[in-house]
Image (cartoon, rainbow, N blue to C red):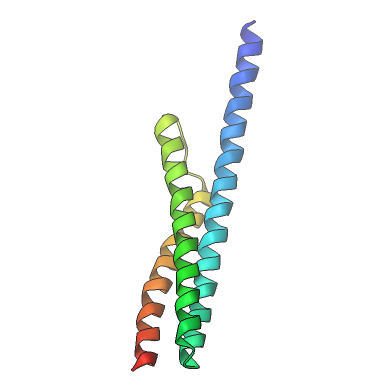
Length: 116
């Protein structure tokens, strides 16, 4: 009976680890999408296609929100698992989010300059 309990706990930890990897990849995906959409928005603004630029920025904001929701999920998991370890993959995913937020903020300002 004790061995069965250990196997169940081991499987649960493996599922948590796999879930954390899935969440990290989702964060990277959404952050990368947001950065690409921001660059598309600046290109559209540079061509005086401001409605198109605004649409790209709206899509980028939606992608950032999805990345943020993934972050919230992983933080919630971390709170529940007192022995959680920070993986290099998760650090990498967080770097992507922070860079995407910076790109979003900067490209918004660049697009405003094109409007002048």
